[in-house]
Image (cartoon, rainbow, N blue to C red; front, side):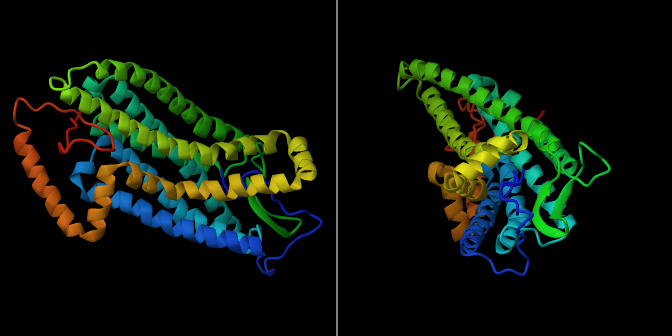
Length: 376
């Protein structure tokens, strides 16, 4: 599911082969600079997300484990696939490395794409439970269950990465190719069945789960908002606070999901069109060359890499807990850990009070109650 050329739309014509010795064209130099900036931001931002969740006890909530898993997927994309994408850009879109490196590129990209959308599906289900069954959240969403789901997500995603290396139509033929008639071309798969099945089961099905969960969440949130508005402010302050905290958390996750869908849904739509309606895509390329080029750059070369670095920005802008943790960690990690230890001791003593009843919440703006999840 490689974003730089998932559809073969930029394949080199067999009548006009470029060479790996050719200097990079101006547009590819510009794209290379863009990708280098994205790589640096992706690595720095997602490492920061992982670091603050590990170091900051107040962020060690179940949903944030899925946030960390999502950050790991983005980090792998930046570390293992973006450097190879940059190399391809410097060689004007053709693959000048080995066949095995092409296989690694495609496999890691497929695995991380599947892991990203599956993590988002898991987070959506977490939000679904938090909004629709808030008083059973601690019972249903526990660390052990979260770790089981995380393990299943990565095993499932790894399977798709490995299956990428197999030819699903003819096992006697290689699944990937980097040359045609002895000349280098773009790194790509040689048959469409894998991409079709993978797109269905590792993208569209999880996406359907996300959209279904958020449709129900929206309906329930509207209904509950009316009920909460009618509560007595003084007597039911805690209920109101908990409800609006959960809604704000759900909105933040919705932004992350929205950014992912905008970045990747066009890729998979174009992928399906190029695989199963070649006449249409070829005619479109001939009849609307400028529009085709704009679509190629915006939806296949600019947006997918950008998505890998945008999540930490969303957390920093829309989540006060993450924003505070980022600032404290960057200023003084040791002081942050000491403050967190003091906070943990304080909340441990106060949580013993019989009047204190809270339930675990998701990423943003949760009350500082320490670690409230129960084990199962």
